[in-house]
Length: 404
Image (cartoon, rainbow, N blue to C red; front, side, top):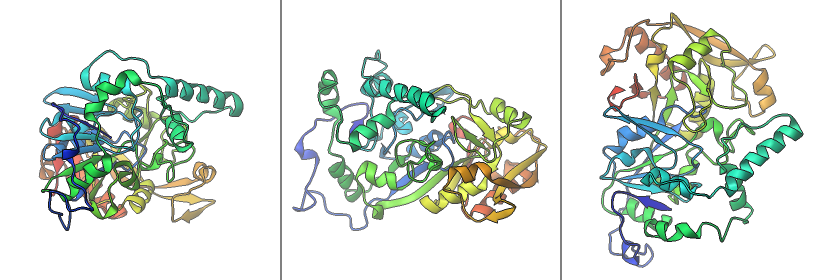
């Protein structure tokens, strides 16, 4: 685990108390609850904006899984930041930022991102990732659409216990002052004095290695279980879990996408939404909002509330479609198919809603949103059973409207 902030503190045993031997700090019987922000679609929902918003009042901000295959963009005071390994909330200099044991860390990328130093060579897994993509294309005629950041091969090396043992020694002394034992650190943070702890998930539910659209997924658990295994914290201490949802749906790379629009609607969403991957630079595939995948993501994560982002991209739509269910061979199916061959064949059942056809980007309160935009939000809430707490109408922090 890595901890990063403006000044580094010494790595001494005094930092911790032993939970089994009556340490210095009294146990908090209830413990500080951990607030979690997770993607509810195929990623790129705007998690960084929500984390940045919540980070202003947080004491500790954590990344729990993924690697620099994730890309989060945050705009603060007109300045745009792109994060790949560092928690998006690191802009809050008063908070401690933590990169947990579940994160794959490309050390040159970490230093480049944190210190703006020249990137050095630590590309073993990245090279393997690229070669594996070439092999998939040659043998199977298709690839997965990996970001080629080495995330999958690194997790594979970890699982097979063949991880690199002697590489990267040049980074050891640079990184040593920032390293802590994750279990004890998080235990004390949870059971010590009151603190606000925020966890930022990378990627999203439909990219989860177990619950996503396998094999076109990432290599980690992007759902709420990954918070526990990626930081060493118990489920008891998980508090609010916020799902971040784009007002439409996008996906990068290959894989089933039932509501994808390969027409002028998709092109309009791509253009207006500037839908290009932060990490890969690839154009994102675009389509209508799919409530089937949101209900599925909620089954797994148990969301407290949604943050609905990029509502303003729909401002020019005369009519908006929303996918509410799937049909297979003419019959409704009440679940999200685990079989990707089945998912490729489903027919989406749409409800049509009238567009508001006016600019929402200057709205800062719920009451300022057009009634038809409010109706669109309420429609989502009613069909998924999760309230919408925030609505995003622009890139900047102040463009996030808090409803309750």
